[in-house]
Length: 76
Image 1 (tube, one colour):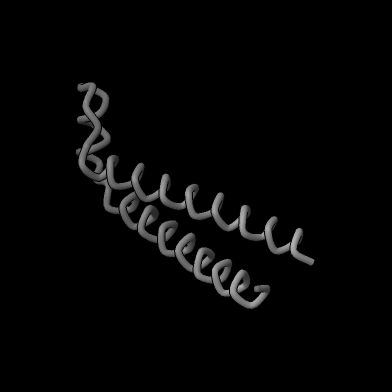
Image 2 (cartoon, one colour):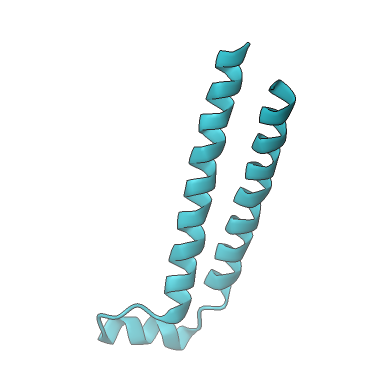
């Protein structure tokens, strides 16, 4: 059981890093034009939506990892 939980935690940690990198890449791909367009309009750009989705995924995977760490600690 402990081995399974550790494997799940490692996989979730990898998913957190992947989501973080994807969000940072989307952030870096934002152009000055995107930033200027945001000041004049209400809508979010495609890159901003990608950033938001990637960061939401990161938070989701971090929360799952914390839950599995808590389960692992309770199983001892």
